[in-house]
Image 1 (cartoon, rainbow, N blue to C red):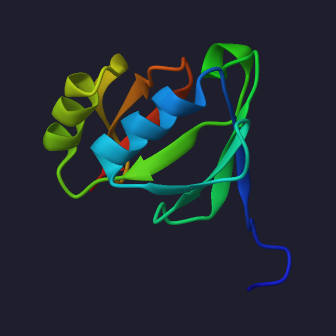
Image 2: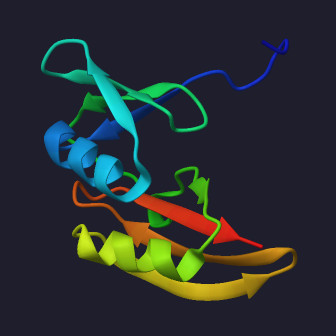
Length: 115
């Protein structure tokens, strides 16, 4: 582990079950539950967990944006929609790649990028 590196993410969710099902279906994440109000995500590129909360996060609230990577942006966007996610910003280009933003079923905003 690198000194002073980001090591773990804790993400609020209004519905742990819906968030887990969505991220397992679309991104293949696995989970280990630690009681009914916390679930650690595995195989996500970084370790972290969802915790039960009454709030959701998005860019309008000034929250950090968690950006995931995809080798096939269009396929991932289709999978997000099929699993009940809503596209909040359609695919757009930026220096170095393309990305889109989505709202997962529990209301949190994420982005996915590709070259």
